[in-house]
Length: 488
Figure 1 (tube, rainbow, N blue to C red):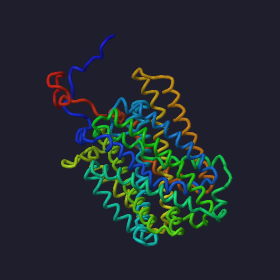
Figure 2: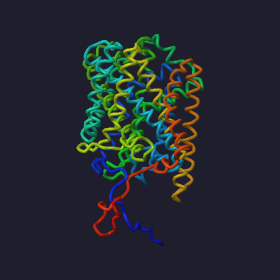
Figure 3: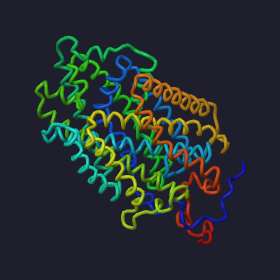
Figure 4: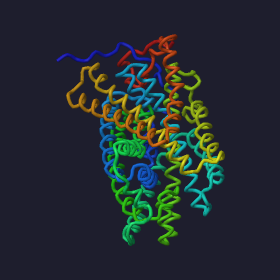
């Protein structure tokens, strides 16, 4: 059996140098995916949104969404076991579909991360208002969102190590509180159908199923964000795949259970509870669970804030990767000397993440409308990125001579299934008359598509470095084992 050839020289500097290399343990890598997904907030907020949009299709759609996301996660682990990237699915897609496919998927990922951070910031402000005993009017929520945005900015620029541990602990506690509240409400459930029952039991349609699956996927968005920590994780080829697969597996069980509970509870509730910004908290209030309501508000607000920091951390690292490759301004590839974070990229995106929902609220948008619209836009972005990464996976494995039949089938099923759901959801939303969300998503995608086309036609040389990932350096091997390359 022949031995693999060893390169005669190693570089003295990694292409993604500047980040805190090999500093994060597995719990901290896992915490990135968990915080970006924000399971305790998602299992309280997303099911009621889906019920309003899709009625009786909600529970089966969550099961389908869970299976689809698990298959996507498995596809991503095929990359994660073989390369340590900073750009997450953007860098993965480059290895199978090339730079053009990667830039389309990368821009969709940026839209997804930014929009879900906006949605989470709105949610954090809504639940903080409840915790303070204030009515979640647009003005109150806008002021709280601005303050929480400043806090999130400080956390992301200073680094994720401490915030990751705190976020993971808070999520575990918050999930416990959510399950306790749902359990108490189920035990105390009484009476027949309420005025919300016609909405909860609305007939199943194909468009409704597609919309429900896409919105169901929103509950998992960010699960793959651990893939942006390939440089910072201590054992990236082990820690990242585990985090990417374990997170949706556990979250899926929680989602299905919480959705089933809320279908029962909200069917018996008044319509104004179903359509309120905080349906489960409203139910707890009406049952006299005042203390549990306050604890729930605290836990969900903390979970949403963790989602803001987790999503912007991932967003900043994708921009950092694009800056290092030269497809976006090189300044985006700079890191902070002390905190070793992509502070320039974060400084570019955080004003938009905070400013857009604040302006929308001050302009008169309802908190639930702002939260739902930004969540739907983010879902479209994520699904586009997931579809392209899944289709890239078999091509990547074929290129390196490791393609198997299950991998080929898994990539095609995940990619094809995601594409069908995406097209169906866009069509369903357009037919229902809410085409503004689709227009906003397409408008958000347009600059990225135009820039990609310009690079491909006018400056193709800048596309060659796309897909940069961490590589071994002379300092990472035993002295004298491999010569170092000359410093350029």
